[in-house]
Image 1 (cartoon, rainbow, N blue to C red):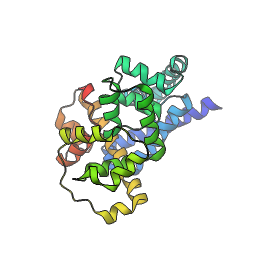
Image 2 (spheres, helix red, strand yellow):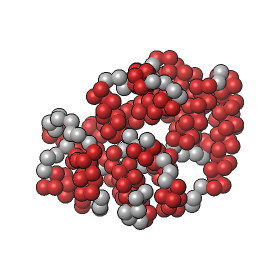
Image 3 (spheres, rainbow, N blue to C red):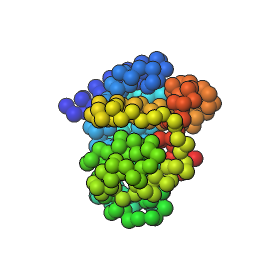
Image 4 (cartoon, one colour):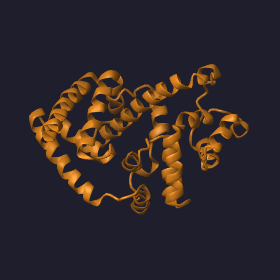
Length: 268
């Protein structure tokens, strides 16, 4: 029964994935992308696997290189093998996972989904600049990730980066009050690595936090997928211009935002 359900998800996923690619990728049809994304998540969950780069790349590689019927069989067998290996070797706690990641300098796009935190400028900063550089303990890093996950405050952290006098702002005091400890270091790092986009903040819009959070999350999710697809195409040998065009990142401003949010310097 479970095997039949998984195979049905795989077949549906492949059909919709190829339809999405034929339309030009995630930024060309957001609704279809959302369907593909949910099916990808369901597929990996059925196998007990996190939605990390390692496992999504396996799915994409098979989906791109095989005919539908062959792809379904190969994908099922590949994920079955990966799940057996993952479940027998996976660390028991998040702190153990971070400890192994620090030693191996693992890709954050593989690790962050396993601790239930999405890749974002702040979470990537914590991973690359705090954990990997041995600035703080795995326990303290995990505590920061836990606060981010429980308080869902990444939108507010982004808003903080747009304020000139952030240290004197109510928003900074609010974020500090929930226990975030790396914000001052992050803000200094952000100022040095990210040129400001000159768009004045509209406080009236910001006050509509529920609506704004939903829209920002949706946009960030699409940009994340588009940028990962862009890197994937570069690795497959496509030139930069074509890779951007195929992922909807041809516009210089859109690409700048995606690069700023999701580029991982350790992978360069």
